[in-house]
Image (cartoon, rainbow, N blue to C red; front, side):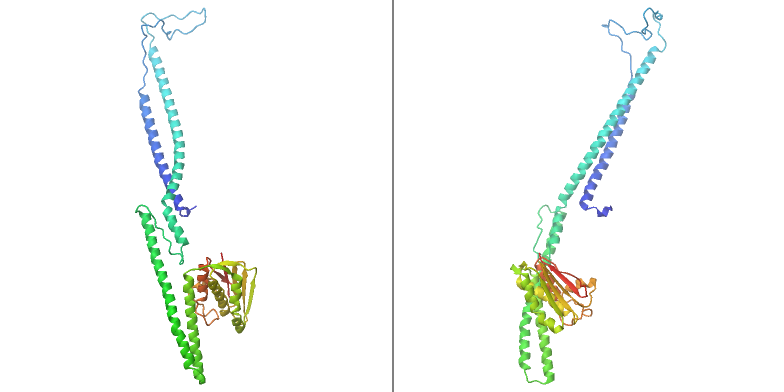
Length: 405
């Protein structure tokens, strides 16, 4: 496994263990070499000397030449008094010195082997303990980073009010948490400003548009010439489209703010209501609209927003469809699926359709709309704790699925 694939916490623990192992091995080698050198010097100076007999001794050890012999055997002649066998004492002393040195060397080797054996065992155990301790310390040290990561993953446009508010010393991790909180403050102010602007602008534009529509209807009342009548219809059409755009912007701004009040909603009933309002549109376009739902399911949410979610999904499916196509609305449990027919959409372009004012106008046959339908669907779905999923339909078009929690 490549080093880059190992988690940082594990790498830090392994670094602690490796450093401890290197330092322990160096210390062990240093101690063993010094101990061996020191014992070698001490044993090199060992000598053996003959100890004279004390006055209280009653017997003296037999001379080297007085060895045991069988009964009746004639012992060898004892050397005359004052005569010493050449090399007798020196040979015995040399043998004793050699024996002592050999014994000291054996003791030295055995002591070094035992010290080395138990030192290696202790070093291995301490290395494992250092690795475990290093992993625990790394986890403690990196806990603020984990908190930052978890908060960032849970954060969205609707939950920008979360803050870390990390306490403790003013170190690198504390400054990282403060920078994260400061960035979140700026994002929240930016999103709040954007939502307020959209909502206020939409409210302010609805009044002049209503006045404009009334003026057109009154000022260009019948009887009119054919040219003026056509002009009036064009103006009224443009006015209605502008009102629809403003209504959509208001709905988008409202869903972006999240759910202010929730209640138990009959999802099947809201789906039937939304699709029933659009059946005349499907009939005018020559599109078959089929609905299928099982036992009613109740979800927690805003009934008005949920109705708009279904309505926008079905409207989008009718708008971007072929003349003899069809739309299928299926509700099974808490899963809503809307499928339409039409020109296929490239998989890499599907995600773009959920962006505001984004349309594939040349690829999709619809000529009306402002590109807000699926954006509103996503915003409402996220306000209810879910996210829509879109994919290519079996006969072209799109299949959009929303699974409510």
